[in-house]
Every structure is written in structure tokens, then in C-alpha cells.
Length: 373
Image 1 (cartoon, rainbow, N blue to C red):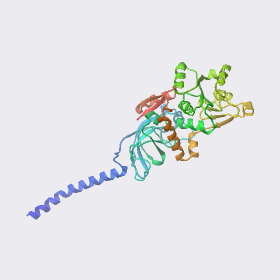
Image 2: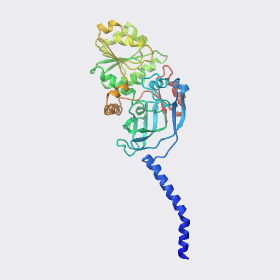
Image 3: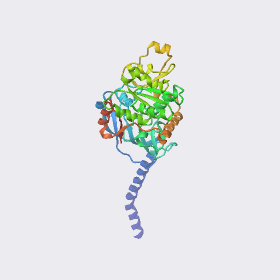
Image 4: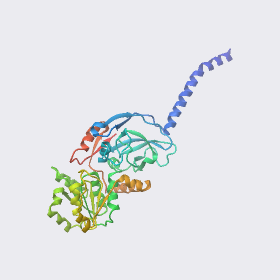
């Protein structure tokens, strides 16, 4: 009877044990698919299925988070800016267009949640930024390939980290790649209150270069002038002031600029050329006025001026990922030394994205819109 009772009890417990075993195996499969203690979660993302007006084509939607395998990295996005290139990409007016539907955003900072078994450079807790454009940073979480990410120090301000990968990189490369400038030399630029313009002012100051900064006239011009001078600007002029003869008195104190940085085009770029030193270079990296760059024949012949273009995405194609990583670390050093800060920013919750998009497209808005996830 005792033996019979034991057999009967074992039969009764068999379904329970089988159920516990299945539950344990299912949990093991879930854990191994993320290669860390990361659970599936609802992802919110700003997505566009067609090119057009960002306010009309961008929608906040839910996405599924894919499992982490091999070289994958699960990233929780912390903050991502709205840049002019993001707007242009959504409108379909950019040199690099992702396959649709696409998640908006080319820049931002995230924190690693989990990594796949073959990931060697990153670990949970690390801060990362995109290694190239088109990654889609306007979302709460994502699973990216390790090669698409670059680790950065966690001890820099969040806004600096979120805006590190585009504008400061563009500013630095333009300052060092086109002219062999020496301490005391000068640089002239338009759109000086833009993200790139503010980075140019600070990096140039760190390199002991003088900057002549041109901006559009506006009601609060003195407030803007004071802010740019606090960043290190030597001179701040409006487009109209640049055209008057009295402006030439500036060059009694500083040498004629050998480098001009143009983000506007049209008449503004022509004025920059007029103030360049013989043999100087104007680098165009944007066209806010949507007007062509016009250079007179006399300036090209008698002053031997050079016209160049710069696009960070092309620079990355021509250089190794290690070189881009070195550039990022150089900029982080400037941040640590207090010589490079983020542009003036307005933090906007992701769900209020319409507010951020509208502000980014308004004239005379000097504050960078940062989406907080």
C-alpha cells in the first residue's frame, strides 16, 4: 500500500513538475535572447512614411523591440536634438535619405541596456551616440548594431552629449582641414548663432583664433550679441553692418580672414568672399537662404579665392571609424576643459514633438530643440 501510495503521489505531481520545467525553460529563452536582464518593452518613436512637411508627416507610434543577438546593442535613448538636416531629410531635400517608413533623427545620446554575445566594445550602462546619419534617434529605445554606435564619456552634460556628433564635429573639421591657421589668425562666418556657428566660436577661441560673426538683424540683436560674445566671439555684426564701409576698421585690429564659413548662400556668402584675404578659402556647409553662392570673376582671378564644400557624412565615408572616434574624444576633452558647451537648448518631452518641430522651423529661434525621452 505504501509503495502504491508513493506511485500515486508521483503521478499526481508529474503535471506540476512539467509545468514548472516549461516555465523555467521559457524564462531562460527570454533572458538569453537579450544577453542580459532586459525585458521586452513598448517603444515609442516618431515615424514618417512619406516625405513632406514634418508637422504633417511625422507621427508618434509604438514599435516592437527586437531581440538582442550577436553584435546587437539594446539602447535606451536619453535625448535627441532636432537639427536642420533632420528637417531636410523628412522633407526629402537631403543628400542622404533612409528607406521609408523611417524613424526621424540623426543625432542623440542613449544608454546601453543590454548587449549581444559578440559585442566587445560596449557594456550595459555605457553612453553611446550614432556613428553615422540615418540611425533614427527620435525614439525611446532601439536595438542597433555595435558598429553603428560610438561610446562616449558619461561625465559630460546631457545636452552636450546629445548635440556632440554633428555640429561640433562639422565646426572642428572646417577650422582645421582647409587652411593652416595659426594663433591670431581670423575666421569669418555667417549664421553664427546656429549650432555650428556657436561651436565655431568656442573651438576657434580654444585654438586662439579670432572670429568675425555675422547674424541676421532681429529685435533682440543686443541680447544675441552678448550671448555670442560670452561664448568667445570677438566681433558680432549684422548682415547689413557687414556691407557698410566702416566695417573695414575691424581689420586694423585683426588680420583679414583666411577662412570663411558659409551656411547661408546668396548675398550673405558674397559678402563673406569680399572680406577674405587673398588666397583665402570659403567653405560652404549649408544653404539656409536657398540661393546659389555667387562669386565674381574678379575675386576668383585677382584674389585667388577658393570655394569648397563640407558635408560631415562624406568626411566619415572618407575616414575610418577610429578617426571619427578620435574626433569625438578631442571634442569631449574641450567639454571637460570648459571650452565647449552645448548650444542654447530647450528640452521638450517626446510626446510634445509638434512643439519642437514648429520651433525648429521658425526664423530667429536660437534655441536648439532637444527631445527628452
